[in-house]
Amino acid sequence: MVGPREGMSKSALPREIDSRLLWAILSDAHFLVPATVFVAGVLLLVALS
Amino acid sequence: MPPHIGTEPGTGAGSRTAEARAGDSLHWLGVLCALVGGAWLGAAEAPTKLVVLGLSPYAVSLCMVAGVFVARWSFPTLLKGTGYIFRDLRRRRHLIVWALLAGGLWAIANTLTVIAIRDVGLAIAFPLWNANALVGLLWGRVFFGELKGADLGTRLRVFFGTLATVLSAALLGFSSLHHAAGGSAHAVRGIIAALGACVLWGTMYIPYRKAYISGMNPLSFVTVFTVGELASVITLAVALGGGVHVIAAELHHARHVLFWLFLGGFVWVVGDLFQQFAAKYLGIGRGIPLTNTNQLWGLAWAALVFHELRGAALPKMLAVIGGSLGMILGAILISSAIALGREHASRNEAVMRECTRYDLDYLETLSALGGVEAEQQKGGRRWWDALIMLAATVFFVAFAMTAAPPALPIDRFWLVVLCAALLVALGLGTWGLWRKTNFS
Image (cartoon, rainbow over all chains, first blue to last red; front, side):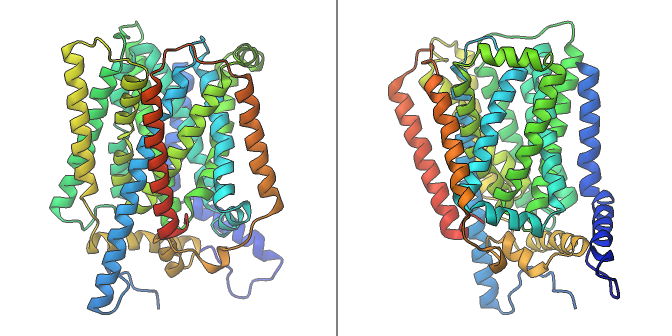
């Protein structure tokens, strides 16, 4: 999913891969759940301190 | 054509038997790692007991994490070298985000426990946050297919084994108390903080498992994890501990006891490394509750070395005996719940998902999960590896030279016995990991 696509120019490759990797991470439920819990934890800590 | 996700990759009956035997062997390696991890995590509290000075919890946490940081860079360097670690990180660079996130989750949860203890006392707070193993069990099932396809007996053994370790840890926690704390006007706040810590720690196991089913070496994961951990703890200590000047003044005032806190962090890292290998070879549903046997070891240190149970009343002794037996029963139940064919197939599906999503090689990832190193990852050491080891040694020796001798009475006989037990456990765990996986 995050590998290079056919016909892609060499200079566009790293940026394209980076943006696709970033999207793969941000749309991953394995990321969304811990990230949401982390934000909720920070807010909880601020509220309780 | 995608590689098949069968129960085992072999083709014939003989091959399947060999694969199943290899799976069993990794299961028992995972059990060994979890038990060794429990022993060292339990011992980590001992050095912190020597600190009788009134340091703030933020300062204590910061000092321990500083020791943790040094140890977490020196162990991977010693065992594999930084070249190996950075190659592993480059090959699975997306996991750096998860490792940092996991470090942040740990730090927030740890600070919430400080609030929980302050507001409701350890007796109420500890059982609440200790249920994190149950949260881990849930995430393991939902996200990584752990126990999916397992027979009823295996599922029941894992569930009741986890429940037994959680309840027993609570009983042992009660027995370690010197007096009943709590009853403050902020009881609700304390309970919310403890529950928050439970969810955060339980959720922290998602990144752990994510990294390992992607084929990452636990040593690489903890190297990045500790950066997120240290950054979060420093931020929290400065933001909530009264600012840089207050924390700096506190640390300067307590410089003679800092070594014991660093040592606590160092011992904790050894236990945590084995816990990470247990999470890799057993999964979080089995590995985490099994490592929670650390309460049993914590109690052994408290009772035998520090004589904390001397003159204890009958109910307290009954809690100790009941908690210890329950913990052993839970550990036996979980250890005997070996993952079989259909559960392996579910795990392989989770591996395939990662490989498709992040462009990883399926067979290579599966091999890495089985403790086999990829050829591209092997390599020699660099000159700066020696420099890192030297810096870590100088750090500890320098603080050890300024350390004041402990003011607490210590039973030297049991100290030697328990230290010997720790070294034997370390030797067994290290030998097992080296022989079967070369620390992969």
